[in-house]
Amino acid sequence: MEFSATRRYSKPMQYLISIVLVVLVSAVCFLFAGMIGYRVVALILLMTVSIIAMLFDILPVLTAALLSALIWNILFIPPLYTFHIATAEDLLMFILYFVIALVNAVLTFNIRAAEKRARDKEGREKTIRLYNTLLNSLSHEFRTPVSTIIGAVDTLQENRNRLSEKNQQALLEQIDSASLRLNRQVENLLNMSRLESGMLQLHLDWCDLNELIFSVIQKMPPTVLTHTIVFSPNEQLPLFRLDAGMMEQVLHNIIYNATQYTPAHTTIEIEADLQGEELVIQIRDNGKGFPENEIPFVFDKFYRVPHTQTGGSGLGLSIAKGFTEAHNGTITLENQKEGGALFIIRIPAETSFINNLKNE
Amino acid sequence: MNKAEILIIDDEPQIRKLLQIALESNGYTVREAATGKEGVLLAANHPPELILLDIGLPDTSGQEILKQLRGWYSKSIIMLTVQNSEADIVTALDNGASDYLTKPFRTGELLARIRSSIRRNTTGESNHLLSCGNLLIDLQARTVKRNNETIKLTTTEYNLLALLARNEGRVLTHQFILKEIWGIGYQTETQYLRVFVASLRKKIEDDANHPLHIITESGVGYRFV
Image (tube, rainbow over all chains, first blue to last red):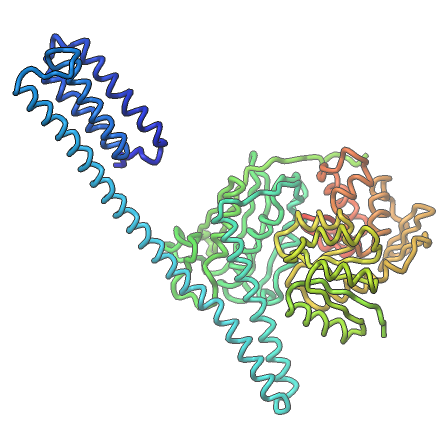
């Protein structure tokens, strides 16, 4: 349980609350002083200081301790309304009161400081672990294409006269595809950092989903031609107010992911619908589906299904999820009964049926 | 061989080198500037046929240089931009950029855009017959033929097509098109634009789902090719 309120209240506010609390408790005690006796009042005030010690910084707590000691002396220890303390016993009580209040304040403060150190350390270790995962996966993803490019360029430079035309062309193609892969990863990282920065701004505009989906399919790299991508436009669909760039990225990442992790000749089917107030896009394939126990993790950052061979950064699906959630939408994955994976994107978006009106 | 001169304003030496080789090997003469200031000076001393201007320059922003150049330079300026900068692209087009290319781009695409931009520098608006693939648009008679058959368009559809076709090869921003066709006050009503583009595509494209004439530039506008 987190007691500390130091982060929630400013310094002046902490002083104010401490003083008001002590004065208030003293006032209540003063009303009932005749019934409870001034020594019990001392315990009540000590308790008040202890509670303040659990909440605030050390200086407001010391202020509360000092103030309560003074109030106790003047308002409760006979003779009343003076600093004077009549009996040795009361004087001793007063000194003890003050010491206990101080010790209380200092001890609580130390415990809280230790707790904070432990929390920070735990947070740091978690960050380091995440950072290592990131480095491992990214260094592979970046080094592979970079090695390819450097190697191919070296070979081209050093063996210019000995390489056959065909091999030269093959090396150039290697450089080309490695650069595209590098570019894809840079895009992923940039998108991820846009998401992480929390500064993601939606540029909402009316989108023709049929057009958007066709354009995503058209922009797929030629390497995915091993797969069949099917989309039949839904003519009943209204226009939706969405961030077109982000929606394209969401769909691209899911479709691209399907082309990378299903066998060649797999069919990927896309369907868009209006269900209630939501835009629902389903992307299904007739591949092998995901291992059931991995499904909860596939949208996690840097997560990759174990034993998958193709390169990947583990960012694509988490970016798809992030961009969907930026639209207050959800994205889910399930295996279909008949086999293959099914991604469902649901986005509550403003709609316009103006396209169903007759022109002019 | 064309001898058109192209000025490159980009702070990255690698990009300049690459562009220089690509352009020179295609017959263009190339001048280079590493800063906006230097670029403006060079352009003033040797007005080029076309300027390639990087949007993110270190000294003054590319947008600022674009505005300065547009004070007197009327030929093509192609902006070199980066991904996810649709808002900057729209601003640049509004500030008078002729076109844009997103880095990294393919050299083939760059050359095609340069050719198309330079062609627009030289052709006037005198011709009332626009021919584009299987489409023939007669701006005087306000008729459109596809594969030699007249197609029926509504007034708005025709106006939209004529506007796009008169600016063949150029990206027109949503705001610009809306203002031109529907008038001031409609600049944000992109839903109309979407609907009319969709219905126009159904009439003029062979396959409206894979348009070859009216190309969507996501987040920016439309380009007629």
